[in-house]
Amino acid sequence: MDVSDSANKDRGFWSLHSSDESIELGELRFWAMAETALAIGVFWYVALRWETFLLLYSSLFIAPLLLFRSPQSVKRGAQLFDKGFFPIEWPKDPEARKAAVSRLQKRWGWIGVGIGIVAGVAIGYPAAKMFLLDTGWWEGFWRGVLFGYVIALMGGALAAAAVGAEAGPEAGPEALTGAVAGVAVAGAVAGAVAVAGTVVGTVVGTVVGAFLTPAFAVGILIWAICARIFATIIHTLAGYAEMPANVRRVAFLTAPLHPPELLPGLKHDHEFRFGVWLDIAKRDFGKPDFTEKILACFAFIITPIWFLPGWAYRFILKSTLWLWWILFIIGGAPKVDGGIDGLKADAYRKFYSWALLVSAAFTITGFAFGNVLKPLLLNHLSDAPLPAVVASLFLIDWRAISGFQMVSMLAAGLAVAVLFWTNSLAVDSGVKGREQVVKSQFPWLVHTVRLKQGFGALSIALIMVYIAFYANAVHGWLPVSDFLHAKLEWIYGVNAKALRQTL
Image (cartoon, helix red, strand yellow):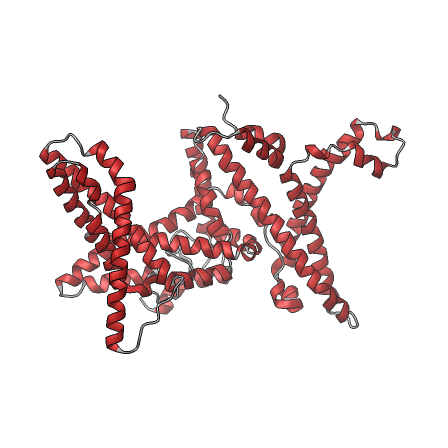
């Protein structure tokens, strides 16, 4: 397909497609909004039909990856994925490079042995005693095949993820081969507790699982997720500032046929991008060499392992935007990195800034009525001998105010202050003679913005923690101790009652 045709396909309000470029340009998509509405409908159908909030719980782990996304975290995540924590510097001399490859393969071979033994003993040994003992020869053989297959799949995935963490894909097939070979050698350890047929089956299943399954693909997926999580954590405050844009990106700009991604930020010609990967697989499948065709088939098998999760968690997040839409308002902050010029050009001064102001006003008003005005009225402030402001300090039950209320109140107050201060500096920057005032106040605005981001991110984290504990209370997964419940009461006040399972 011609490049211009592909670009035109991604253009237009009614297009089912979107691209990274169309999203950056802020081009709305009708079908993106329709998909969001459909996803929310699916959420409530599932919730009411099966009486479960599984999609909401799932979004707790997905929301930080998508909604805290920032240019900094995208760049860092792509670098980590490609280079790992310890990038390899290959020698230029062919003999030295060959020796380095050999050392890398041997080292990861032994690491793979260790991973295989740990997986076999920690996971496989208890399972072997449960499923492999007291079986006939053939039954034990086939159970052993399945058992070894699963253990090798898990061990190979962990080994591949570990290779990626060290040096990314640059570690190359040599390190992957060594690591997976180590898993194959050690993966049958747990089968030694059973009869001979089971041992043979476990060995067969381990070898097949290590070399003829996409275990390494799962490992690369694990490493991609880990790299993304690490980069998001490192750049949390920058991600918080991007929240309104990210909510808008997910709800209004990302169309149903937007190409799924293993990791955002990869170059357009990166082999792990969806379109490039499929093109390579199609090209190899069309070659006359039988080996190339087999490898292309494996590439097609790997494709859903890498790219379906990206589409799935995008749909799950869309289905829960009825809850996370509030981040469009409470998230965000002016981008102060560009100085006054960047501040004046920033979208923070547009519509959603005023929506933020309204939201903050509701938060402050609700806090004031529930914790200030109501206690004053109940205690007949008019009869108090002290001035009203002083009397309020004694009449308010400060212990009854939860930590979450205080954090939300501070975040709302700082949001109002930042909004007006930002506009004031933007106006003053255009007034002759006020340059020095703007210059002296701008660093303090930066500190206030960082503080606002911190309290805002903390309030969002507390909301996620509350939902997680509520899910635990509803399903009775883990008991909540008296000590922990006391801390939850300090954070959430009377709402913490719903976070403990009723016996």
